[in-house]
Amino acid sequence: MSIMPVCIIESEERMEKLTLDEARRLISTMITEEHLILHSANVSAAMEAMAGYFGEDKEHWAAVGFLHDYDYEKYPDDHLKHTEEPLRAAGVPEEDIRAILSHGYTICTDVEPLSNMEKSLFTVDELTGIIQAAARMRPNGIVDMELKSFMKKWKDKRFAAKCNRPLILQGCEMLQMDIKDVAGIVIEGMKLHREELKL
Image (cartoon, rainbow, N blue to C red; front, side):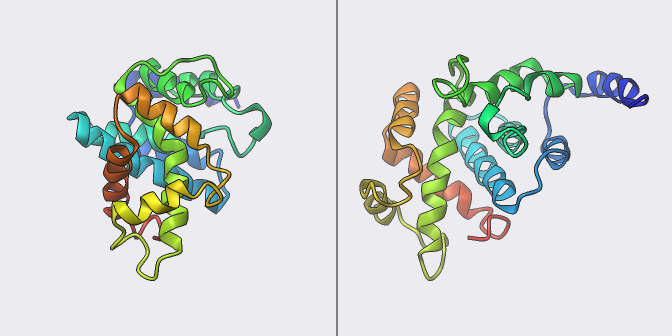
């Protein structure tokens, strides 16, 4: 514990923005369960794709996506209550911390998504779960998944029922985008990382 202040100072000095390597390092200190690591990777791929759509920094958005569930494994009933201070101490920029907190809006935080990055994270968090479940049911996984086949699963509320569809639609409304458009972007983004995502 005595060396931690030194590490914190170094982090604050060097981190201008969150990188994917740093996000992976930070998440590895808190998350060990494979399904949660996969979820982080799914959201990261989705955020990279959304960044491309908005003409933003793909790696930066991917990094924020990878880190979004930082405290979930250790504090599932107190999610995002053990995120802000540790990430700030590690030198993560305030903009990125705010984005991470905003994905819990109306569920476990009152941080409203305002930027396109925040709105995207709020939306794709649950959406990737339905896409992942749909891909796993297909012989070729996500490789040849088309939007039309995904939308059939989307409309079946019994499929991946734990994924919060109203929340996803709320996010789409924030983005002023149709669910078909967001899902299409995310599916293509996840295809690019299908090996890492085991899809």
